[in-house]
Length: 337
Image 1 (cartoon, helix red, strand yellow):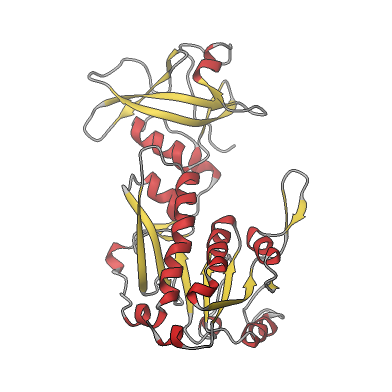
Image 2 (cartoon, rainbow, N blue to C red):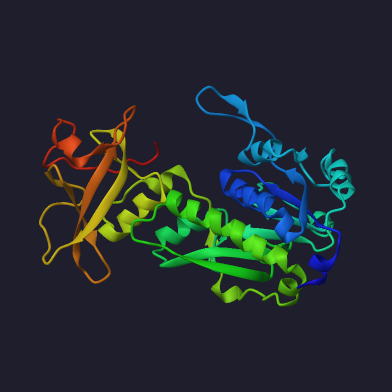
């Protein structure tokens, strides 16, 4: 057992995060405070913002958890000394006398002066097996790339973008049916478990930190709406990954519709139908022609769920019983919307 846990003094932890992904880790650490001999002395999160159709000002998921458990909440706008409140934000942070700061999906840049404020620095819970995917959208990019495995990395934060030394990893397989949401939920749970493991023996993990191999690093660029537009020239496997990873969409008669689930089908021979054409609309499958893969194999894709504007997702059977889609219809790409 490490010297921290032998001590009668609890490890003073500041938790910094904003969305539900971070809130899952916070809940886990709150439950484990006595076991880990830690005390969460404050929670840092983004300022309350308007959200939803009614644009109601709403507290972040992390703030809601903190309030529920009576933990002090701080919501600075910036830690930069170029900002008028930056120095005050840093002084407030230092006043908590933190031993370590746990950061996950916080959304605020932490300057070097902040990273060095806690005695043991800042730990980041990152949703990828670093250095595979650094950046804003590691879950989306892992699915789009067809990765078979992802996971959580607990990283000692440095000034670079997700470049710090790695303290601990937990792996998570990516199934053929995983979506960004399902993988998000799995990794959120693993994140809490992983950071608890590190906090239980923090000096040991820091002493055995491993530097990242820069040659293996990829940048997980933030996803944009246009990334979801389906290019039917692609093969069905690539298109299905896009549907699983993003809000995917196509156009029919000039109307933008969402494609919410699908299954790829490889063919033994090349079809004569143009890509994007609906081959058949049936109760169990909506078959659409796609491009060929790298081996030159023609694909069809089985669209199993589609959502029209203003409506709910419809199954293939529901669509077959309507007049919304017919054999011979062609899905289109429209640019510069």
